[in-house]
Image 1 (tube, rainbow, N blue to C red):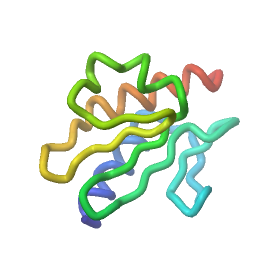
Image 2: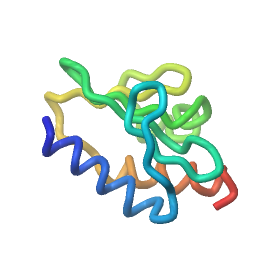
Image 3: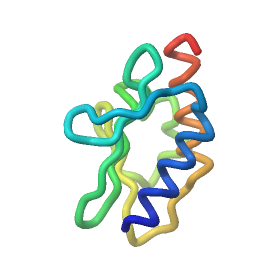
Amino acid sequence: MRCLLQNIRETIRAAAPDAAEKISRQMPTFWQGENLIHFAAFKKHIGLYPGGEAASVFAERLAGYKTSKGAIRLPLDKPIDYELIADIVRWRVKQAGG
């Protein structure tokens, strides 16, 4: 799990190189004028929290994933789509004015 979380962190860092890392809501968070994305490990999934609009903006690519307002669940029994994570983060950076 640690390796998986590290890969997600590195993916986010590459997509948002100017963002600061912090802990917010007890989760690793990338911040650039506002919270860009939080992420956390759970028993059966990784939770990504890029904010409310991401699930609708990326709806086509998120088909097959459980989503709710502001949350995306990446199940641990499927390969992690790092390119999707990077695209969401780059979109959030643009939203934040970066």
